[in-house]
Image (cartoon, rainbow, N blue to C red; front, side, top):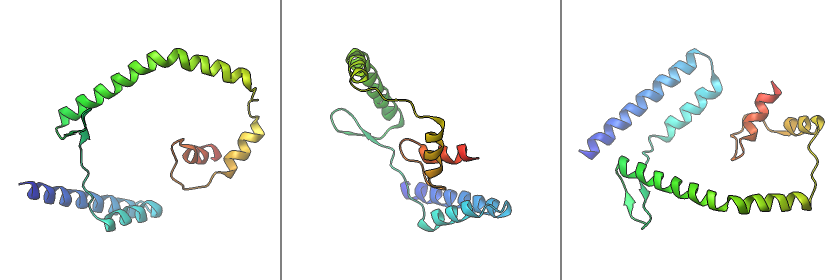
Length: 135
C-alpha cells in the first residue's frame, strides 16, 4: 500500500513538473526552464514529515507534529518574556559602549551595487533585495 502511494505521488510530481516546464517554454522563460529541467533530472525526492518530541521520540502524525510545534513556540514565547528585561538591559549597555552612525545613502547604494545577481538569498534575504532595489 505504501509503495503504491509513493509511486502515485512520484507520477503526480513528475506530471506537474512536465506541465510547468511546458508552460515555461511557451512563455520563453529560459532560466526557470533550465532550473525546472534540472529538478526533473534529479528525480523525485520524498520528504519525511516527522519531528521529535521532548523525549527524542519520533512523531509521525500530522496532528502530533502540529501539537509539538505549538509546544515549542509556546516555550519560546515564555522564555522571551522572561528574558526580555535582560535583553533590554544588554541593548542599553551596548548602545552606551559604542555609538554607530547610520549609513548614508551613498554607502547603501554602494553595497547594493556590490550584491550579485541571480543568487539565492541567504538567511538575511539580502541578495534578492538587491535585485529589487536596482530596478
